[in-house]
Amino acid sequence: MNNQNNKSALATLVTVFFFWGFIAASNGVFIPFCKTYFNIDQFQSQLVDFAFYGAYYIGALLLFIMSGSIKKDIMNNWGYKNGIIYGLLLSAIGAFIMYPATAGAEQGQTGVFYLVLIAYFIVALGFSIQQTAANPFVIALGDPKTGSHRLNLAGGINSFGTTIGPIVVSLVIFGSASWSTDELASMITNNEITLVTVQTLYLGVGLLFLVAAALFYFSKKLPALKSDTAFEPANKAQNLLILLTLIIIGCFGYIFNTYAQDTAAIENVENIRLIVLFIALLAVIATVFVAYSSASKKPEGWGAMKYPQLVLGMLAIFMYVGVEVTIGSNLGELLKQSVGNTGLNALGLPVLNDSQLGIYISLYWGGLMIGRWVGSITVFSPSKGLKKVLLILVPYIAFVVILAVNYIAGNEFSTNEILFFAICIAVQILGFFLAKDRPVKTLKIFSVLGILGMLIGLFASGNVALFAFLSGGLFCSIMWPCIFTLSIAGLGKYTSQGSAFLIMMILGGAIIPPVQGKLADVYTIQSSYWIAVACFGYLLFYAFRTKTVLDKQGVEY
Image 1 (tube, one colour):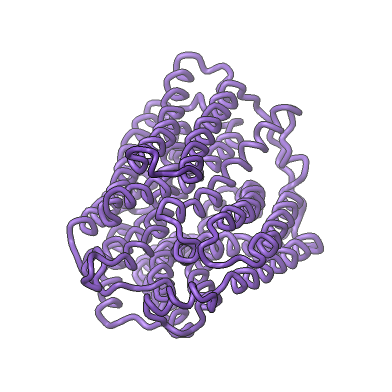
Image 2: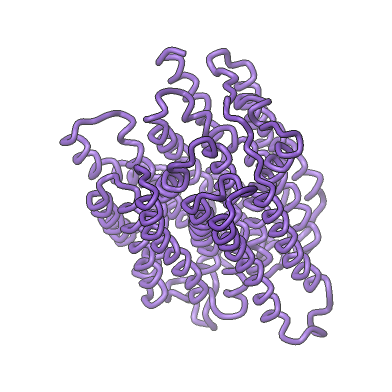
């Protein structure tokens, strides 16, 4: 392919990155709406993330198991282009299922919520297939040395989807009016705001998936592209992952069962649920360290997991996706939960309702867009001097885009709010200058900033606390390519398999938000953000540990 065709193919390909971001970030608006509409607790509302990100894990694991059973890489047999088409069709099926799943549903019908989760799971299962194909596809469209820069560019498009998704979904569900909390609750109770709007939204999304599938199918500039990497069996790794899956299913199955029972008959039911959730979380951590320990002693049968940088990186991806998702997904509850009869939330700010949350959730995910736009600067090969200027200008240009999108949607930030976030961006820019494009240093700096942001949010109040939590998006923004690059460094023929294992660990977005949700149910929503501190803490440990591992192996990174 010539360079012009590569650019046309890349432009077509990044459309799916937009879809992933649009739907994923919309969870932040959809979750509090579901909590109010279906009359569920904070843990149950976080099952939206459990279904969405759990599907990524299940999809990648099934592809791995099926490939192992036929001893051929299924995605390689399909080709990347066909893989994306099949994934889009599956997502379309899930979107269309949302209509019959919610037909005739009324406020308070919790059973319907679980049907919504099934439809959502199918949508995300399609995303899992798309992502497994699209990431290596982007790298293959040009010089492999600049593959990570194209991924950053695709990530920037993804983040644009995350920025406008919450705004669009908020407008579709609630309209442009800003209702008071009592008015909104009354309208939902009286079925003036119903799931019909959600049905309409997902019918539209399903049609867009079909249009995108057709675009890929008929695009002559988009090559089929198949990897020539041979499938590497890893029976021990496969068996361990299956065991982990059974433990997670068992834990969440038990919790679901307690919700179906008379909870009054179960003593300390909330504490029991929290303990079981921590068992699921600890099972993931234990799985990683069993693989780390066993593979170092006897590497046969572990495949890519015999490399410690990958195993540690799997847990890093788990923690990274978990913290990125959980900060945004629990943000709505943080801003709308009243403390006593004060009319103020846990941060000491006026209580917001579901229709008012989109602007802040958009700002959180917009922070990720800002960082990823900065990360894609290198794609355009600027001179050193110009690059320094762009490192300062691009973040604020991206911020203006976020403000403009919200303004068009009828949302306006106060001068103080703009100033607070502008200061957070300045801290991020300083981090970029200190990191100097080095993945280990970048990860160290932004992990520390993430920890500091969460601690300020935990102990401060007002806008200081709010924007400290919102800054989490800025500090998460650049972590994915750093972790991914370090984790697959030196894997050689196991690179493809290692990438698949890393995609599986998007599972963090399915486990950590429900854990935080239950912490909020048992304790308080603000104190539940300690789990975000723990996640950033592991990422800081990973940055130090992986450097030691790679230096010992003599691997360049």
